[in-house]
Image (cartoon, rainbow, N blue to C red; front, side, top):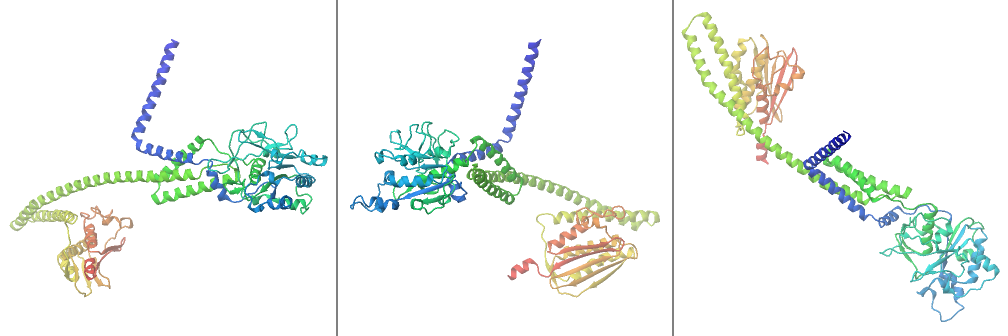
Length: 626
């Protein structure tokens, strides 16, 4: 029983895993284009990260300038000129020191001078003295008296050892029995010749910096990056003559770490990210790094890779969410912020974070996903064009259907009206006359509906063009009013005109006449009995203006924008009056075809004023003149 339960549980678990795998696979296949682009951007960022090796520190050191260094470090630099008096007595044939090219550490050896130097420094109770020059077999046998032995073998004095070409350690002449006062002065160059790292040595010969500081390097692994803090002028420096002639205060070296080196016009001089430095100057930077625990720290490669993945995802979100200009601004802002943050963290906490690789990642993401966006937009545009084409065909089909039905209805309506007219003349029965007149009125109303629909179909067709002729707008207005005055008379409405004399203007007389008829007919329709309609025409320097004002019920403010639509009427007029809702739509359409404007003002209970303007000179005329 237990085995069957275990088998069933394992089978259910396996099925769930298989189902989830299938779901993930289907998701990947649906979004493979997007996911592969993300993977490509991330790979480019990681590839750029691999190029951000130790050499990237060089630019950081050069850009950030001089930084604060430990005040415990003091450099004593011995120059060639300090030994001019020593060597001037040896041979009159000796070359000028400034022209010497084979100067080695042994050049700076003189027992008397070194005894005086060490004696004066030790009297000020320094913390440690590190001699970076190697004095061993190269200076021959040295005999010391008691006073000299006391100075040369002082436990605070540490002498540099070196190695030969066979990696054999060469000890200096002043090593004690335990070799506890020795330290390696080895300086190694990278493949490009620059000194960037310090190499911890084996335990039997620690580094000279470890001896003078009393601290150990944080690791025995080769290649600890030196945190160069600026130029050599950051460190306190003194010359040999200043010490020998007591030109310094008595507590200058108290509690300090002293590094003694030499300055020559020949080798050894080392190239560093900050330029050429001597061995003692490089030792000073290493000492400052070890004293302040300023070792440059960096995470494992995969931590940076994970951070790059998050950065890439954020950049993709911005690019896909915001417009291109806004997204570009955010991308540049993020790149600048990361560069500034990287420099601040490096200078303040000695933590290395890449600046070049994130910029490459953001640039690659921007380039790839802008193309992705363009592809999506192109697909959407294609789909939209297809949909527009489909809708256009559907609209054309609808228009053809409506046009066909309207044309087919015109003939029966005309026949019905003719029969009604004949019956009106032949039958004098009062009741029948009333019914026939109502039928005739309904036929006329239906005919107007059909005519309005045909007009809309005609003006919305692609082949529709306006035919402009020079005409007097006042004559067109009078012709329109002639057809409408009987309708106004039946309702007891007066029509007054105030037509200002003006020159002829080019416009489509048929369309403008239709505009006037629609406006006045609307005014008659919505004006109560004994009302007044005023039609006014004026001329300005740029256009002519026609105003139709009535004393009807007015239009509600919320309906002002709606009444210009197709098949749209005021919310309170649907039950009061009949209409197609096409009149004002045609008015606006016809006027805008002429380059004019239509305006409406209305107050509920006080009436409505509709005006339109026509330009005196059309764009076609202006183009011909130019």
